[in-house]
Image (cartoon, rainbow, N blue to C red; front, top):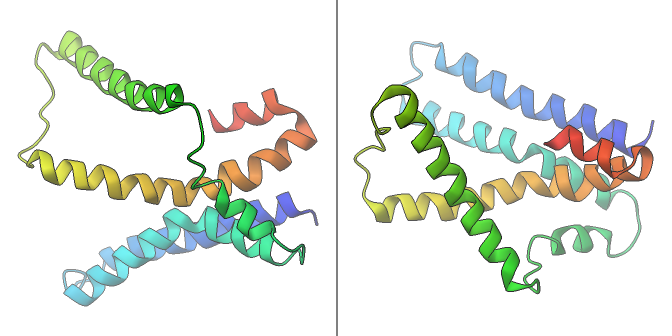
Length: 161
C-alpha cells in the first residue's frame, strides 16, 4: 500500500473517529458536564488536525533524516514576497465582504455579526489560523505533492478547491 493510500485511510479513520465520538458524547444526558465538554473539545481539535498528525507520523516513519523537519518547515516559511501576504489578507477580506454584500442583496439586510468585541474576534482569527495550518500540513504539505506527482497538478489541485 502506497504512502498516499495509507495517508487517506488513516486520516479519515482517525478524524472521523474523533468527530463521531464528539457527536455521541453530545447525545448523552451528562454531555453538559465540564469534563465531557473538555473531552469533546480535545477530540474535536484532534479530529481537525488529524490530517497533519497522520502526515507527520507517516513522514517520520520513512526513516529519511530531515523529512519531518522539512514538512514542518513549510509552516514557518516567512521569506516570501510581501505581495503574497497582502494577497492573503485582502483575499479573505474581499471574500467576506462579497458574501456579506450578496447576503444584503438577497435578503435586504446586512448579516448579523454578533456581539463579540473586536479583540475577541482578532484572537479567534489568530488561533484559528494556526489550527488551520495544523490541518494544511497534511493536505497541502503531504498529500498534494504526492498527488501532483502521481496525477499532475491540475487534477490534484481540483481535489482541494
